[in-house]
Image (cartoon, rainbow, N blue to C red; front, side, top):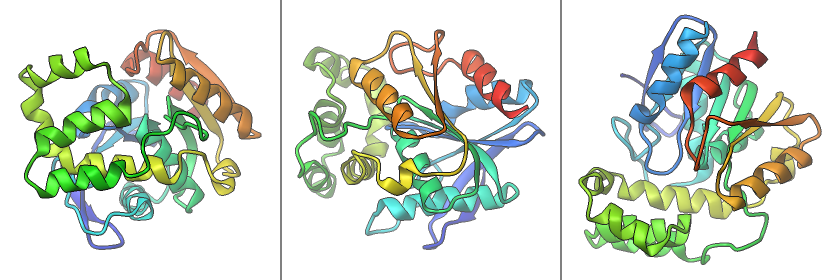
Length: 258
């Protein structure tokens, strides 16, 4: 991992895998660069290069208060600049929301691949004060409670699944990422419905979803693809239950970048 500085001075850690044209891989909630490496490797095998990053407040990247979605969009701009000044961008889940916002804010994206973005379009929104309640738990030294609250109200996981995660070894790995839940909740509150600028991006847009996946995400993918004039909707049958299948996804990405 190497680091570049975002516009506000926050160090952002990233790694490039492969020698072809760059594709920036932007993960969703609780993800670090490690989660994106299988896709990055598959992109490299397809003749591209995958660029994975730790979003701010995660892994090897820093964090600077106060958080704002626009600052995190600048993080993507800094990484794109570091790998040559332009890149295709693949974002998954909240990472897709961030990627579209970044492109609307001027990040030099040659093609946007938006995988299962959790746009709600004003329906079934989480409580408006969720980011503040998450921040209060983080400030109180209760990262586990912040993780659980985000899973319950931000993601909508069933209680049985939440309890299973909390009692599993993976829960300890989520605790250092608790501050990032505040960021994700703030981002998705700010642009739960895409802004006119986001819907007017000039870069080609491919909206992807798996089969099967969460019904909310099916609706969001279809509505987003229908709201951007030049967007296409692609179903990746290998991707299931809000996951990203590296080989299937790399196939669809590479087919549109060659």
